Image (cartoon, rainbow over all chains, first blue to last red; front, side):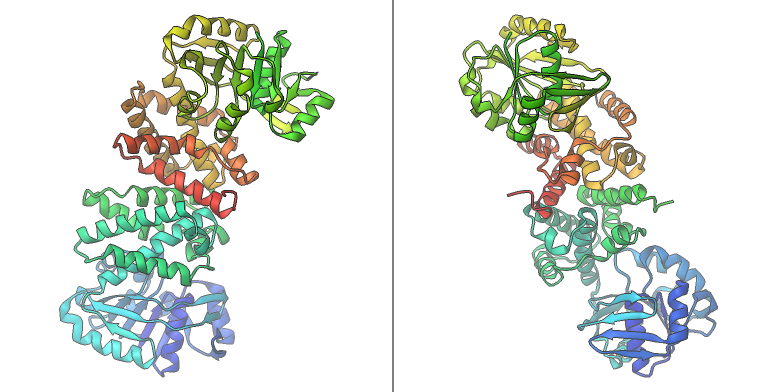
Length: 308
Length: 308
């Protein structure tokens, strides 16, 4: 199964590395020149639970020409349309596209490029960290849940699950994956924007009673909007999951903090709280907390002059 | 007319200084030891539009013993009850108490200590800055609007207006002062909490479209709650006033930024957005923006470990 990793940051490198080690044909695609050059010259370096270095191919998406059996999408949310444009030439009527991006609403973008029976939506709790160009920190274990958005695609999807599991990616075919996607979005929606704004770790924010009131209000809005779009969500179970995650990840600054505060990069807020606010508006469900935190993050992007 | 300034920060010093220069008997009260000592040893130094140094008396509130004709309250909001406790001994049945604190709801606190016919509520657009202990920067001009909360107190209040105007404080007796108090609270409620949270100047926040959406939502909540409590407020006029102020004060960090970010001190958020959120809850008026920004500020106080 010939696979492209479309977007080879930390997570893309983890999936590419594990497929490569399982003797799958895999090519990393990325747009960051330093990262591409480092891997082309010195290989992809793995540190963390084990040390390794593999000479896995990497190129810019527009340089890819061989038809893909599978594309795993791992871009930042706002880079997704650009990536899909740039890899049109490797996609034919049999190419499966698996989306593992954080956030909500990506299927609406992907459908513009890929027929529904070839789209797999998924969610993962694997983690990874990019230390320097070409060097990725891999610790701990994870899992993937995925589903073909067209039920007709299930048998083909099961073949992909099998291949990914040969690479120990711990993948489950999930006949109802949307609740898991929403649950992870809710983790991001309560931690990323708040810790970026408050300039604090997850543990610091969740230790504050005032912070927790905000967490509960955001979860409530996610659940109201998700349910109205037909996704079955249990508010108490999601709250428990968020609280559990806040303990496990307590010492970390979430990725939006890294983007906004540490690196002055645009955030994915429009695909997390912003997506819920937008869906809420369409469905006449009030989402003031998601609206306000989205605007607070955008205002900070404006203040830091990282929005055009 | 023997007057105490109860809370002699920058604004208290301005009012005390102007009364002193108009040959009124005035004593500053404060709790900051360095500031008291500096003024006792070297006098109150005035810089800015003019330079001056005056040997005006200053002491701790519990040291005051002479009965007051007038007390002008200029504490931080959260220090108000403590100050009223500590000056009980200088208040008799004729002492007038003028409240010029920022924020909302102070009359409910003052009523516990002072009979209604002796309470004057006011609002001022004078400004002042404390540069170092004992040194105050005074520039530009301002005005005061005040009202006796008991109509029976009006004639006595007019005498006070006359004395304050001898000190060029530009005071008007306002038969309906609450709209002005709410309007100023709305300026604070749109600028203080937001700029403290975003770590930016007023101009930077108001230059952001996303920031402006938040401004308009907060104004709307203030107007809804104010009107429900019987205060006549014109949302468009308040919006114009807030926008005008944001231009005039564009280069400044508001006082809450100074408190929270620069000096790691507790903020007055509970008396601005927090007061509107609380009143809104009692009146069943949704105030999610005021609730959320109040909790975001409190969370930051927790993160900075400046809340007990």
